[in-house]
Length: 84
Image 1 (cartoon, rainbow, N blue to C red):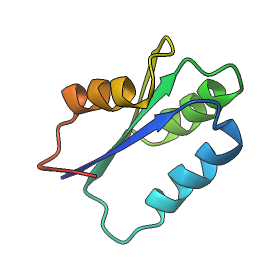
Image 2 (image 1 turned 90 degrees about the horizontal axis):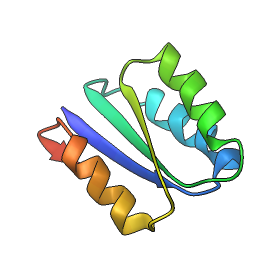
Image 3 (image 1 turned 180 degrees about the vertical axis):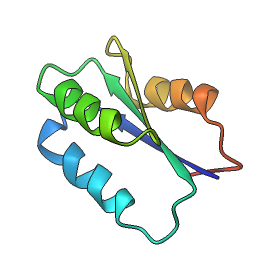
Image 4 (image 1 turned 30 degrees about the vertical axis):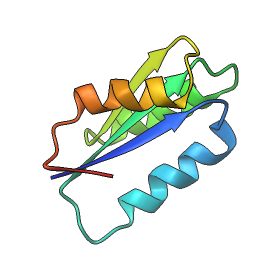
């Protein structure tokens, strides 16, 4: 399995497109870990909706701590043999 890590801060305008791009891939053994790094836009609403429809999408939220902290949280949660 591949773990795809997506740190996000106020990317509600792009996150649905990002998720859709991964879902359209021919390789299907993946998990997508999206970490909302304290967004103030609609990121959480969009990701929660998509995650409810696809169990491969996992969503976490944290107070704004920067992209490295968001990636580190996702790395701790990753279950894949490979990390992207």
